[in-house]
Image (cartoon, rainbow, N blue to C red; front, side):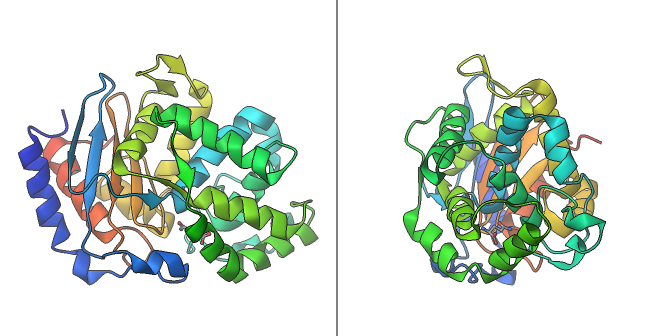
Length: 308
Ligand code: GLN
C-alpha cells in the first residue's frame, strides 16, 4: 500500500497544498488560466481495483503533455520501433518542452517524443484517414486503459490552444521543411490540440498510470492493452524526459516514472504496484505541478517508492 489510510493521504495533500501559492497556473493556453491555483487532488489505483484518493477527485482537467506517452504507445503499435525511432530520438534535451533550439542540425530529428517537436512528429504518425478517425483511435485506447467509456475532448481547451499555438505551428513548419511532417500543419495542429485537450479526472489518470505500472496489462479487464515492450519504452521515457528539464532532479528526489502536463496533471506508474493520478494546476517555473511534486516527494520518501 502507498498509504496507510485515506486520512494520511489527506494530510499529505494538505501539507503539499501549502506550496501551491509559490507557483502559477499556465496562461499561454488561455482556457487553462481559469483554474484555481490551490486545487490539489490525488488518486492511487491498485491492480485489485481498489482506489484511495484525497482532494476533489471529480474535478476534470486536460491531459496536455501527458497525452504524449499514450500517443507514443499508439504509434509504436501502429508503426513499429524502427519506423518511429528513425524519425525521433531517445535522448533528454535539458531544454524547456517547447524549445525550438535543439532541432537544428542532425537533420532536424527531434531528440525525444516528450518534447513538443518530437510529439508533433509522433502525432503525425497516428494512423487513420481523417483527424476524426485518428483522434477516435487514441480516445478508444485511453478509454480502454481507464475503464471509462465517457472520456471526451474539451473543445474549449482544444480551440483555445489551436488559436494561440504559434510556437507549435513554427515547430511544425520547421519539421515539414525537413520532411518529418507530410500533412498540412493546420490539420496536424487540430489533431495535436485535440489530443492535448482529452479531459479526465484523477481517478481515470491513475488507471492509465496503472496500465504502465503493470507492463501494459489492464488488471481490471485482464487485457494486455499495450505490448510489454512498448510499455517498458514508455516508462523509460517517463523517467528520462517525463518531467521536462527537471527529470533528473525528479528521478533523484522521487524516482517514480511520471509524466506531467501544463494543466497541472501528473501520471505516475510505480512498477508492479499501482498507478497515480494527480491534479494541481499551480506550476513551477519548469511547468510541472508544484503541489503535485511536493505530494509525490512526501509519498515517495515515506513509502520508499523510488525505483532506484
Ligand atoms: N499542449 C501543450 C503545448 O503543446 C502541452 C505542453 C505541456 O503540457 N507541457 O504547449
